[in-house]
Amino acid sequence: MNLKKTNVLSFIQLSSLYKTKYHLPNQKILLQIIYSCSHLVNSLATFTQYRNQPIDFSIKELEKQIKLYQEHKPIELINQAPITFLNTKISVANQVFIPRVETEFVVNQAISLIKQHHFHHVFDLCCGSGAIGISIKKSVPTCTVTSVDINQQCILCTKRNAKANQTSIKAVCGDFIKTMINSKTKADIIVCNPPYVAKKDLCQQYFQYENKISFNNSADELYFYKTIIENIDRICNQKHFSIVFEIGYNQKQPLLKFLKTTPWYSYAKFSKDLQNNWRILEITYQDHNDVIRKEMLCKLNKGIKDKALLDKKINTWLIDFLTDYKAKYIALYYPLKIEPNILLTLKHLLDNKFKICLPCITNQRCGFKEIDRMNFPSETVHGIKQPTSKKWVDLEKIGVVVSPCVAYTGNYRLGYGTNFYNKLLTGKNHTTVLIGYKLQKHDGIQIKKHYLKYTFIKTF
Image 1 (cartoon, rainbow, N blue to C red):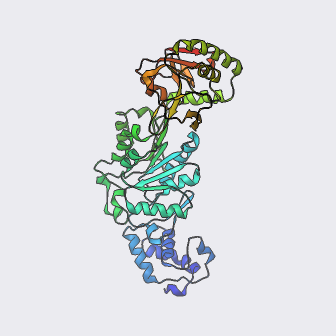
Image 2 (image 1 turned 45 degrees about the vertical axis):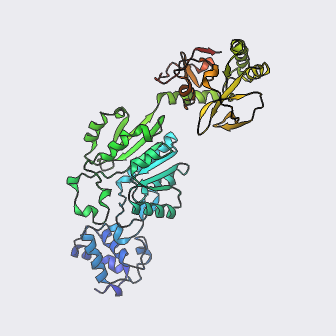
Image 3 (image 1 turned 135 degrees about the vertical axis):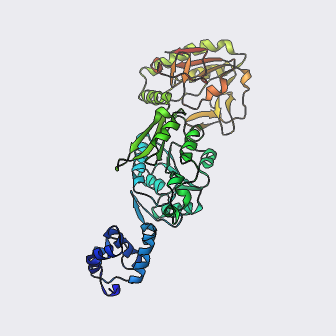
């Protein structure tokens, strides 16, 4: 049959005969191969549109492409058409891993977690074509996505696909764990489809057209899972994070055995895909105190009943308490709206020539800086007013430190999560005073070994 003298519709009607002749699994594969040979037909959908038009290729070219398919060349590389992956169109190239449909299940789980937990910093490790990171960015445009792969061809492919899908992501060529450890940004969520095929299960057809390291890059098929999990403390947001792995159908038990040797066993869960194969390992952790912190901040932001009256009582008590500390510096704070407003105390002490300093955090240093008047030169950092002077105060010269809290239990404070006071004052001999409102008491706070135990606590 001379294909140059037929049309698409006639060929489709005869395609079942060609499928049998060439021992192809189905007609769809044959139509995709036709597409690879044709300059006229640019997608499967256009077979209907162009059904009465001639096909612009020869049977010799068709047989050549069929032979490549029979030699296990992926159909995606034969027809060179963009692959539909969730909400994206992904192009692939030789030596770049081709996205599989089962990975869509993994990505949907990651997107659900990002939306549920309001995650922002996303890392797509072993990114290949970039399909995972690009799909996530298109689904949640507000997040930042960093895609990492050790294969330069994968990074080039990822950048092309990001541009084609009109998404902005960061693509980094490098070792997955070194890149994470060296990153200034800690991951809120990591999504990883690593090379996990065991060496004994590898066959030549896997990496004749795709890179071998996309299937196996270690003698241990669990290497990538183990390495990421063992470095969680170094690469993830310690208050709240998720990791979503794609796993092999037979890897649940060996992964469970490994997880039992780590602190993360109780936070791990496995999920099956639509084919009832084990497909996902998810680890989601949220610090218990961080949950309390968020709940209390929500309560405080709704307003504090009789706050002005309570603040007046706090200032009266604080002024009286601090009169014995005139010889040394007094460390106070500049109040946020939800905190006890101690500006009356601050003004009274400055007017009476007390030595006052306020908390200050810069990129290079955190500590306390001296102020000598209410309208001191300042800047706002993380919503907090802090001095811009160069007068850092030696901690040993500070007699008493007064600090607010988000919540408290006993003589322990739960702050905003920066550990400012814990880092500076734990193990020192300062008199420390915690002030707040009675509604901030929460007996569920977990006391951690680095928490500062306050000398006094005063609430109203």
